[in-house]
Length: 317
Image (tube, rainbow, N blue to C red):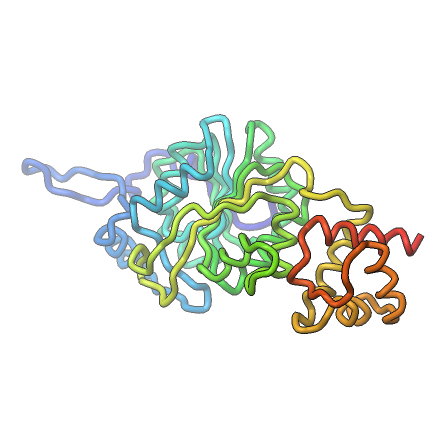
């Protein structure tokens, strides 16, 4: 990796990873429990850290939800975890106790001393300080070659959820589960069924590659500082093969994007505009796929999208 990284092992037994407590007249060194609001504030304050709204920084501190995230990832000592946005290392500490290896990517360089201190007791954690969207994940995954399985875990701000999910999918990586903390509205879109207001291109694209499960509802009070929105933990169980068989994936996703580009339009109109074909050609494609041209994109199932895309792909041969 060409980005800045740090491995806990390199810190050895440096005692900067402990805070001082009084015990029977002697000062002892205790590991930081960053899921404790008091200790988290103390650690952040010691390094002069200030939250950045533009990065959507809200650190999860609710023990029940933390455990649910780790359980949903289903990692063992033989497995690896790729964590996106470790923050102060709250989830990272628990993942490191369960997994064989954790690679955590943090965009905010000012969290470097915080993470180095909160995680320096773990020799199986590698920190990468970079923007995950700029990383070559194939290169990152080379570090997981000895792992039986690899899961992705992340606490994602609303504005980068979709780009990051597609970035993970784009590399064709060996991934078993993707466990994400996302805004409730995003979770609803990921898990939506055809016909509802939340069903869209994101729903189809993700469900094509994964089985979506809602793991936990999370209130604002579970975070420090508290966000203004409700959140949901979702698990994407990556399919061994896509949910439907398509002739050409590029055509499939082009058809999906076209169908949802103008939600109020019928498929006849949205496809002709989105695919750059005439209405007569659009009508022919829909007839051959056995789909009523008066329907709207949000009513189509994955199977119907696949049928339509396969007709479109074959028509270009």
